[in-house]
Length: 188
Image (cartoon, rainbow, N blue to C red; front, side, top):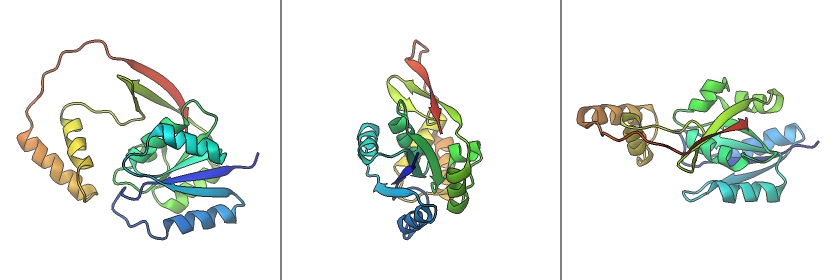
């Protein structure tokens, strides 16, 4: 089967500039005789729209080129399809990539895309919202929410927000009750 890659680049993820990244991805794919197209996310890119675009393009592999938010978007888009997912981590934290042992340098991650073995990952929905490792409550959620609103990304921004939130955080009581939670095995 001929692989066709759809690279999903999040232009605002991480701290590094993305100039030249699209050309580099095309060059690497061509070097390995792979068809490739690139799509840039926008603030309103939905998993359903991404899935539609990927299926229309005939993609066999959808590659998240960004951080954990991009990974979550791509995971939601490929869930329930025969498309595979890969990660080229260029975000601030790259939590799933780190956990999966994917190299943080694009060249190493691309090598995993070429030669890595398909692995299963758990994904789930909380109250109907798809989540692939992006779930938090309380302090963790407050920091993540503030971080998502920042123009400047990276470790220093995250550390600053964590300290500020620690100094002003007030625990929020909430009742425990039934939650809509389901697990979906997800190939990555």
